[in-house]
Amino acid sequence: MGKTQRAVGKVTGQTEGALKQAEGQAEQAVGNAKDSISGAGDKAEDASESLIDKIKNIFD
Image 1 (cartoon, one colour):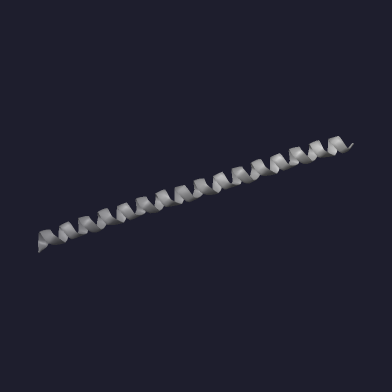
Image 2 (spheres, rainbow, N blue to C red):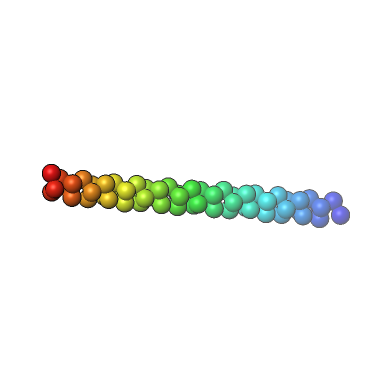
């Protein structure tokens, strides 16, 4: 009985560790996606500001 309980405890611990690792990887992936989206937004904003400045310069 003791061996079985230890084996179950070991498997449970390994499962919990694997779940925590998967959760951490998912959180990191979400963070990376947010960073990429933010970077793309910044580039789009910079491009639109640059275009507006060029158009203003045409009329100046």
